[in-house]
Length: 149
Ligand SMILES: [Zn+2]
Image (tube, rainbow, N blue to C red; front, side, top):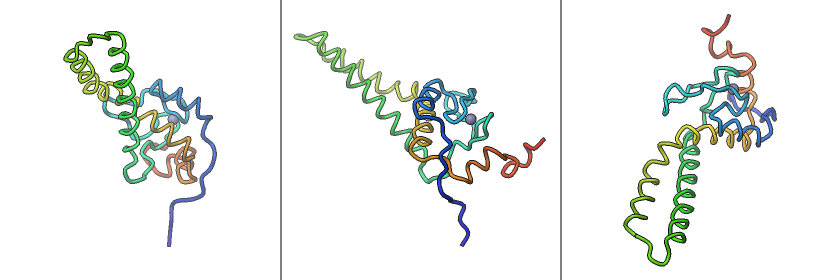
C-alpha cells in the first residue's frame, strides 16, 4: 500500500502572524500577496512559496464557508443589538429588519476573500504542513515540471 500522508511537520509561522497575514489577504505561510485573480477567484498555489492552498482534504473549503457564516452572523448580532439599544423604546422594526437583512445578504460576498485566507491560516495552525506539502514548497518542480528554470 502506498500512502502520501506522512507525519506532520511543524514549520508554520506563529498563529498571530498567520492570522495577521490572512486579514491582509496574504499567504498565511509566507506573507505573499496577490492571491486573488478576481474577487472570488483564489489562485491554486502561492506565487512565492508554492503552498497548494487546497490541502487536498475532501470538503476543505467548507471551513472557509464556516468562517464566513460565523463572521456574518456575529456582525448581524452586534448590529441588531446595537440598533435595538440605540433606538429603544420605540425601535423601527421594519427599518432594523431591512438593515440587518441587507447586511446578512451582502456581508458574505464582501468577506469572501478573507474567509478563504483566514480559513487557510486556521487550517495551517490546527494542522501543520505535512511532509508532502513541504516538498512542494521547497521543490515545486517535482509537482510542477513546467515551472522549473
Ligand atoms: Zn506563500
